[in-house]
Image (cartoon, rainbow, N blue to C red; front, top):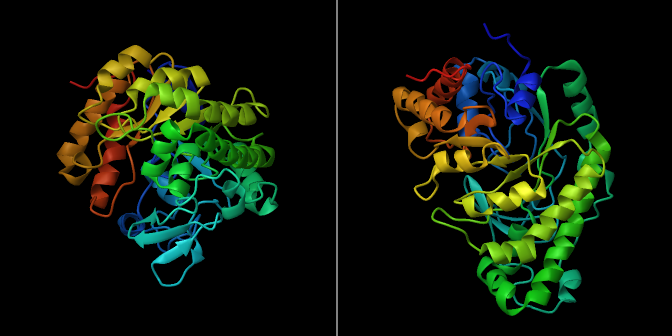
Length: 385
C-alpha cells in the first residue's frame, strides 16, 4: 500500500521523475487559473460565501482563493507580486482604455485586454527605447509588498508546494512585441537586429531586477518560481525559428534564470510558453528549466513523443484540454484525465492541470470532476483500464 505523501513531498517526488503516491494537481500555471465568472460559480457550488480580495486588479482572472484550492485538493499554493509592470490598471480616457506601468495603452475586450499602439511602434531609434518608455524601478519595494509574509506562512505552516507567480505577465519577447507591435518586432529580428537586441536587453534588465526583488523577499521559502510568460509558438508551429530563438531570446532567459539561482541554486523554475513549442524543449532543458507549462494538446503536438524524448529531463504541468473536453460532459472530462495520465504520468514528471485559463463557458461541475478524477485515477501504480 502506498503511503500518502504531503503535497510538497508529492510534487518534489514527481519533479525528481519518480512516482509519488499519486499524480500532483494544480489549478494553473503562470497567471492562469479561472476567469472570474467561473470562480464565482464555484464559490456557489462549494457554498464558500463571499469572494476573497483579488490578487490583482484590472483583470478578469483575478482571484487566488486558498479555500477553493483546498476544496479541489490541489497541491500548489501561490505567492504573487503586489503589482505587475504590464498590468493594465491605470484608467484611461474611457471605460475600455487603460495604461500599464510602462505607459503602454491597453484596450479591454472582456475577459482580456490587448495592447494598443505600441510606444515604440513608430521608431527604430535605439535612443527612443529610454526616451519613449517609462521604465519602472525594480528597486521600488511596493512590487513585492506582502510576498515575504505569505511565502513564510505557506512554507512553515502548511504542507503545500510553494510557488512564486510571475513578476510580469509577459517575458522579453512578448513585451517587445507589445511595445513595437508583433509584426514590427519580428521584422526587427531580421532587418534591425541591433535595435531588437537593445530592446530585449532593456526589458530583460527590468525583469532581472524584479526577479531579484522577488527572491530577496521570499526566495528562502519558495519551492518554485515562474519565469515571466513568453509565447514562442502558435497552434501549428513556432513564431520564430530555433536559430532566432537561440540568438535573441535564449540569452535573455539565461540571464533571468541566473538572477534567480544566484539566490537559491536548487530552486525549481517553471516556464510558461503556449503553442506547439516542442522544437524548443531541448533549449529549455539546456537553460535549466525544470517545469514546462502548459503543453497544450494541439494537433501539431505529439504529447506521447514529447514524453518519450524529454520526460526524464524536464517535467510538464498542464495538458488538460480546455477547448473541448472541459466544455463537454463529465464523462468526457474523466476520459481526458485518463488520456493525459496515460500519456504523461508514467514515472513521474507530470503535474495535472488545465492547459490555460478555464473560461466562463466551462461548467463548474466539470472543474470538480476534473480534480476528483485526477485524484482517483492518478494513484500510482497507474491502472487506467
